[in-house]
Amino acid sequence: MHGGRGPTPRRGARAGPGDYDPAVSVAGKTAIVTGAATGIGAATARLLAERGARVVAAGLQPDALHATVGAIVAAGGEAVAVEADVADPAAIRAVAARAAEAFGGTDVLVNNAAVYPLGPWHEADAAQWDAVYATNVRGYFLMAQAVRPQMLARGGGAIVNLASVTFYRGEALLVSYVASKGAVIGFTRALAREAGPDGIRVNAVAPGAFPTAATAIHADQDALWRGVLENQSLKRRGEVEDVASVIAFFAGDESSFVTGQTLLVDGGWVFG
Image (tube, rainbow, N blue to C red; front, side):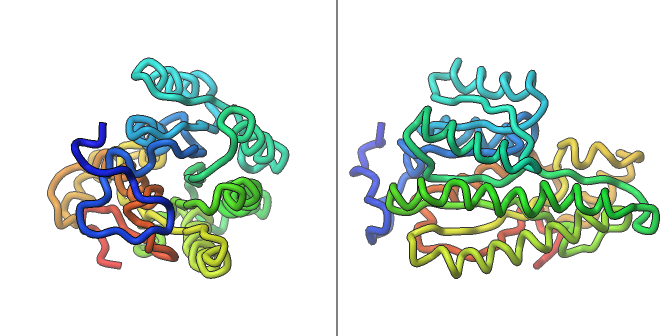
């Protein structure tokens, strides 16, 4: 199972080159993934399970969510589904409680769920702005709070927040979304500073353009992808698995000395 390597070092242990194996760096851990029904969230849930994590897949779209879990279980992994809107504090508490009930607690939290209304900024109202922040920022904050006691009981943990390349580019017609993703980066940095002494690492991943519901909101798909490929350094379409593998890196023991960072996964579209 370990490909001839020794056991995965304990959390916090120092290790030399070659001591970590990506295939086992999350083995035995419990990971909550929000927005796990489709796209990056579903790909991340599948990859973490493939690498031996027990997954709590949370989100809306019940049919797709249960399909994610069904695929994991069919492949021999462990996963449970929790239908939850992370804009709802009660739903967040239910997700954390399910992780404790099913698997004894949480080691990894992937804050991925997000909403992204498209339209002119001057036509948006306060309710729309608040709805974006309720999911994209407050939901991340409350989800982290909810799992903190479980992580402390397990000696630490890893939180991975999903930001966006749009924060670095600025993006017309997505002002509330872009602003929320800037807040996610600030939240990541501040929480990494404060939670570090408790053994909790906090990092962020900022995806570029990928074939997800977030890019499907653009009316002219041909123009979107043509522009992306023109500006990327790598001349191929990114796949959600490209993001999932970086999330898995931040979730696992390979990144045990990395915190407070935001990594762009965008094919070289924006150089930070």
